[in-house]
Image (cartoon, rainbow, N blue to C red; front, side, top):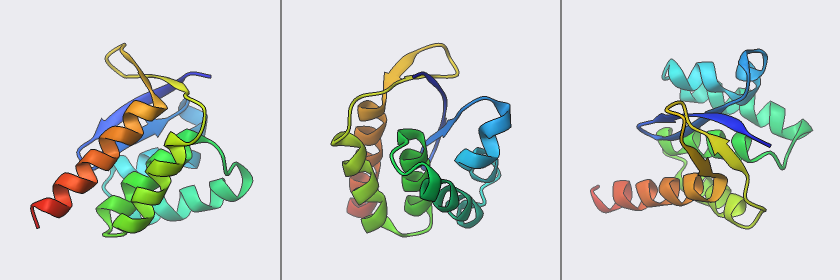
Length: 114
């Protein structure tokens, strides 16, 4: 399974083709509306709880809204699941584990600078 990935400052913002963008919270994250993104992704996760792009986007939204414990748990959950290859906008391919590791690193860096 391949996914298109857009990297945001807060973490990974993952999206699938255009029709699914609303389901992954991509548009809300891109607009900086992390609360709305979290709501959309939480609803989608009730249907697809194991999709790494949803977990990673939700973790990014949580991180941006101060829910760092929940973000950390989601990133850790992704690391416990099989690796999924994800296509980056620049053509690179990155694993779901790499995205989760980077997200965890950002959380640690953010907490250390506070």
